Image (cartoon, rainbow, N blue to C red; front, side, top):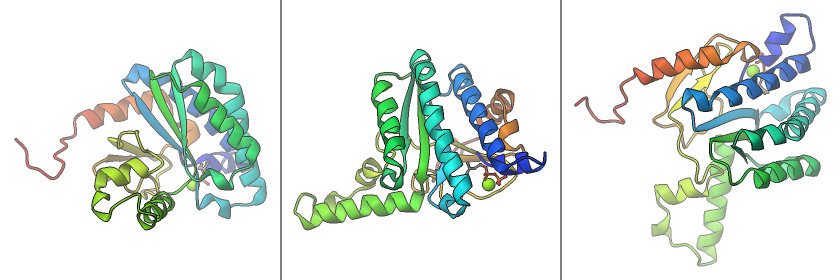
Length: 224
Ligand code: IPE
Ligand code: MG
């Protein structure tokens, strides 16, 4: 979800106004997703690199996350949305962490839409944490090197139990992946749109899905 800052700056407004507008868009997309046939949706809210921003912006984003969880909890439950978070939580404020685990527990039985929110998430960081855990288990005799398979690694990532993405969309015209789902995206299809995230609506998502449906995915094989 890129482009909140530019959306606000273009209007002469503080960047946080763009982030608030961006959060409104998340609500709208989450509500529209199941009707578009989406069962799994991951949104990249805050990366391990986003701490480089000003304290004001970082704290503002964190308070938007906390408020979003508090305000959207009932709607998530009534719409059958299961919410999960990926990323390293140990660096987050304990109050935010409590809200995160609270909504995860409250929505754990739902499956109409599986919403994953990436906060303090980085693909490399996730692989690093999983690797450390495995090394620890090997050192203490709980895991044998030959048991370290691709599936075992996948299961140990924050996304354990969440399918690899079929489609990754980046808004705002940037054509990089910026540490998003590094291990999981090897065969994802990519879509880059110039639309800034606060302007990205369900109709554009629907158009992208039509294009996605027309792509031939060979997964390294050849056409039949
Ligand atoms: C939102 O857009 C991404 C977040 C980290 C929340 P940006 O804040 O990156 O917006 P731009 O790139 O400055 O326009
Ligand atoms: Mg950006």
